[in-house]
Length: 496
Image (cartoon, rainbow, N blue to C red; front, top):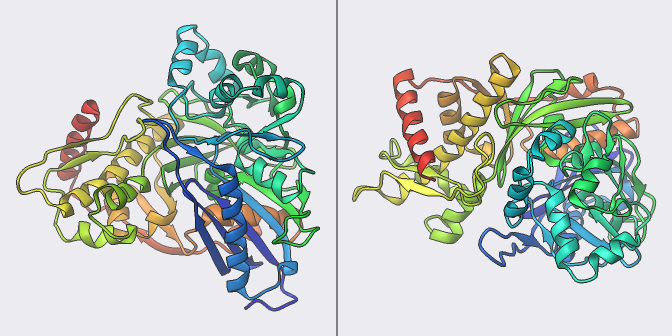
């Protein structure tokens, strides 16, 4: 239990399958955590939706649980940091806060034909130069255009200024402040296909290209400032500043104390996301990676290269829920470790297409090398290896774009607790893998930004000194075996 005089920070981590709420003290010690899952909605193959009201309920429940476990009153919270699943698109009524329909999730592929049509028209070079992104249904703009065109009355109401658009950070902020704040930060804005990466604001040319009315959009702010204060939330008292907001993967980079150019991290969540800090230099990839804003502190913007793996932990959930070969996700390590290798089984987890560096939205998952001797254990091991192989492809592309090898990769997220996965990752990368003491670095990053904004931390250096390592994994697999593994993987990817 925290002392009454001790300042505490609340981090709201609104993710793809659930919401976490963490209570941390000023020394970055976790005092308590709350968690609440919410339903995933799959109306058609390739479509993924969320009910925004269910997301809001999960936020309330997670925060309430965290406060109960910490045994502190809500009034003890000095500031709130929000981090969120990025790209997921919500439209709601500015007056009532009522959603115009379901949120379209970042995994959703329904706008692939629209992206292909824009590519056919030769629009991708302009999009890339302006936003740092590719034309892919992953990002928000085509999702937003779909809502405006397909939900009755939306486009008319949007042009009249009656509707608001946001990624999930904006929606949660709006609800926490009873509609007083409609804002986002540079990291989330840079994932919409509507943001000018160099100028740091919404781009008129992109708004025209995707037919997005300007009145829909939130204000864009630096990451460490007060975005608004709680008001009429019900489960929190009025007046607590929401003092930090950042997209989940940039938040993990920040929480991992990757503050220098060349430092990199991988977060293993529903998907897997590798980011490398490029400092104040905008680096455009020639190998299918994304250029994104990492964060803006005051007037200084830091950028990153990013590679996104769409399915990582989600393949473990599929083994649990779809095939029933494990009862809970944490069971997979023991099952996979019960066999010495995958028995030549290779699993490509392309359940919603392949992300960087392949960018094949039409790809689907495949399992290769099945024999009569294959068991659930071999499939479990192949699933973990499939996660690591995808991350290998991203990191090697990243090294080529940066022009130098990455000698250390910091890791976090739920699957980073899996020693078997991390050892295999170190082996096939030939890179040291470093796991921090606090695995929830996504939430930690948002809390640290809130602490910076209210003066709890004087500098980035003071935060970096508090960061603690848990374990380091060194490559140990012979090069010949590594190459054999990679050859099997490349052949399987071609079949996906």
